[in-house]
Length: 317
Image (cartoon, rainbow, N blue to C red):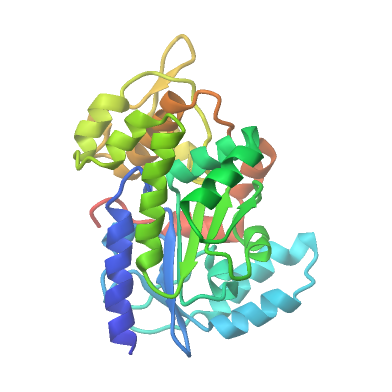
């Protein structure tokens, strides 16, 4: 059973992980599959596109994790360390197994066997449009799909997000963060891809829709959209977590604008993907709201994020 699940999980990780930067950037995002005994999830620090059946997968006692999270009444002072300890305690050790990521909590709590979390640019723009006109976007979603959905306001990834995400909805829109999909099988991913295309058509993001439908290579996309100097923006939690690393790649102009030299792509592909995603969001929606400063300020110091920075693999590893 576990060999079949690992093979399917690695396939789904590759399917999402190759859609850079439209679905994922760097080592962001996580995908899991549950069987009766365990939750199998992309291990922390691995890129989705680097996961194989024998590398980059963690095994978790999800029933124990879900029960502890349901019953936990931790104080604000101890919650993050307790959560990090819980991830460690419920993650199996063994040859070829990795450490579960900071987002494992909601994977454990959600009802369906398949859970996919990634940083879809369209999901971020849809959340933005929802804030502008809740009635319009709600009606549009109802006309496009019978999948149930929930909109979640910006919150701290890890412990806080894991406490907020539970239940049986098919889609969870995370403002300033991304999307969570859950279903009985991997088909939920194809359904979301169709919603993305329709959104770009109906909400006047036609150029982004063309990019979604193209197979342009990353470097060529970067040449087209990533070289302009823009204000430095924090549109993703990972920008906050890896701020110092990104700053080492960026060049600042006297105007205060920043750009990412194309020759630096191969030096740090992960940061190049984050920057190109930032460029695309800024191009298609200059009014897009940044990840809340008060959350970003504390994020990089979380125990789970410190571990991820230590374990993160460079592109191609």
